[in-house]
Each structure stands twice: as structure tokens, then as C-alpha cells.
Length: 314
Image 1: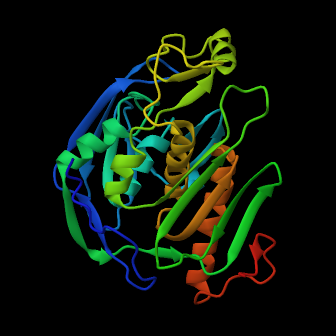
Image 2: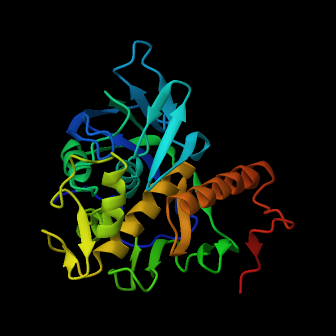
């Protein structure tokens, strides 16, 4: 699959890139996991500096929302954005695809509040965006370069950000559930490039244990979702399904981490390691990174020495 990658490996910290938009519009359709409603997403090119602009095309006023952490709302097992009357549910798989393909500016029109779940991965979005192609725009993409070690969370679950080795954007997820879960401890790491995301992360699907699936369905949610629409994992492995990767669960958690941190709204240069993190913790880290970017911009790159999230780099 040609994703027209703009870089194949790590880059020097000071070697930024230009912003990109897509060359032509593309469309993705499917049903929402939670609502069961049919949904169509139309992604269009946008001028430089636009960001990811979400639009509710089904509402009379066509309300808009820039996809940043400032509009994030906590939700169960997903990431939602809210701007006034405009709600956008389960945005993380689209945001991961846009971020990984280095698409910085586009208009995303959605005809309902929940984005299509597709097969629970980013693959459907990647396929359409890759066909649309990229256009380089005459503006430098803003960067947040991690210069110190930061950690947020508790011993039971945390995310750490540290400086990169050679200007790379590195993501790692360490998965470890309680003893009674059928999902074995596993991990995945990636130095993010468009090509590597397509090969190693985009197909990794949403998963739940059979116990979680029963709880969700008994609450009247996702009743239309079958064991073929996502990974439902029992004692013997996926029920009525098979893994695409041996460590598919850790890969999907890495995909979610990339999508949630994309809400910082800038290119992240650093190493981001999550131990048992989820959407809620990802959101806290994204908010902290956004604050750090604003702080560094306002005081010429000097981090706050009193910040409890900051640790001395070793």
C-alpha cells in the first residue's frame, strides 16, 4: 500500500517538516459500535493551519470542533470530543490514522455523533486516506520536543515521556491485566513512520474479554456487534475469530495511545511508554503535553521547574 510516506526513519530533533493535507476527498462508512447507527465520514483537504476540523454535517448549524485535547470528554473505553452541541464519539482510530500518515490539515464531516467502527482498527481509514494522497503545504509543522523525563499515573498504571535518541517519535505499550483475565501479558513498541504504522499497527483491532462483552451487552449497548466485528477474548483465545498478530492487544493499545496523543495538535518528538494505560490516562498525558507545548512557546522553551510531572532526565 502506497502511503506516500514523507520520512522512513528517525530525524534530527531540529529537522522539522512541512504540514500536509490530502490531495482529494475520501469517504468512509460503517456502523458505530456503541450506537449501532450508520455513519459516513467525508474527509476533505483543508488550508494550512486548519488542523483537524470536525463538522457535524447532519445538524442544521453544521457545528464545528477542532480535534484537540481541550475538547476531550472522558468516556468508557473510547475517546469523545464535545464542542457545544457538536459531539464526536470514538475518534481515536481516525486520529491515529491521520497522525501516522502525517495529515495535519483536513475537514472531517460526520453525519452522526459516533464515527464508524469498521473492524475495530484504523485500517479502513488508512486505505481511503492513502488513496487520497498527500499535498505538502508551505508551513512548518509545530513540534513538541521532549527534553526531560516526565511521568504521570500510579504504580498500577502510568505513562512516561522521555527525550528521543535521534529525533524519533517512539511509542511503546506494556500490557498486563489481572490474573483472572484470559489475555496474557504482552508488549509492543514502534518508531513511528507512515509505512511502519500501516504494516504493524493499522490492522490491530479493538478487543474486550468475554466477561466485558457480557457486561456491555447486558447494559443494552453494542447489541448489534458480533464476535466477528471485534476481538472478544475467552479462555481459549478469540471467540469466533483469530488474532492478526500474536500481540494484537498490545498493538491496539499502542494505536489508541498514538490516536489519543494526536489531540495535542502538534508533532511529538520523544519516547512515550505506557504501562497499563488507557484512554483516561492518555487524555491526562495529552493535556499535560499540550500545556507543556504552550509553556515552552511562551517562555522560549524553558520547562516549569516546579512542575510535579517533570523529572530530571538521567
